[in-house]
Length: 312
Image (cartoon, rainbow, N blue to C red; front, side):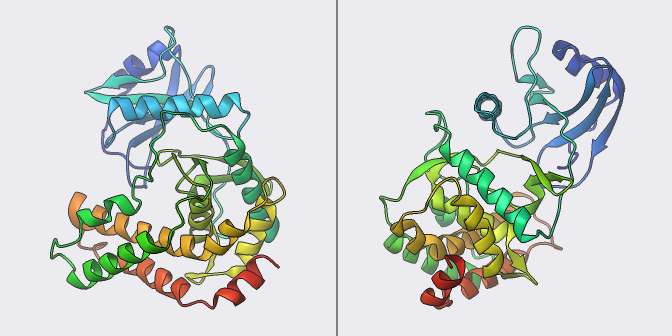
């Protein structure tokens, strides 16, 4: 969560008046990679207002419609607010704006096996929800976008590696794996806990109709590392919680290791694109190499050992 659009109190009041919110105070929420977010203290409670910096009005409407859909299916996430006329998205300075009820919770960077099991169960519950037809049938930074940075000549070693891994993924990902509603970015900072109990999974900006096993691969990448390396014992806890709700078939089990690697490759692409092309940052321009290292380590893991630990 970051601040790209600075606003004054008078502007904020104009923005949230249609939502019937009377502001007492507000504070900007610093940090993160996209959007401008504000914590609002109001007579009717607390809210988070988001000014969308990088997505279109249509994409913002799709996101808020999805959040409403998740709420109807009793999934633990941020409830979206509507205006007097029933709209979820308004605009400020030509940018989409939406407001969500503030959720109290704590972000953990390291999880116990019980906490990972809880997250796994919540992920399986998400995967049981019918997927809306308006979600894209690809991940926003999945393999279909990898070619966009190959050949740029910015980091030729990385681009060569990415090209090789793209060819490998196209050849080895089974097309008939189960698809459905996936979050797409379940890293530690998108999960809230309260008193060691999961409170919500948030930030559905990357949600799509995609391989369900991709979500688990990304979840293991984002939640189950120790010292920067994939921790198979933590992965086992996540999977154990998941399978309390939804059992993985043999093809999905056989593909999990590949999809952890895929998630690391995809995250490396995003970091390379973000910090070298979209928003160049000399301090972060090599950040993609950390994910390359994770992908390489997962690639060379003995598959039988991997399966015996994760699915013990």
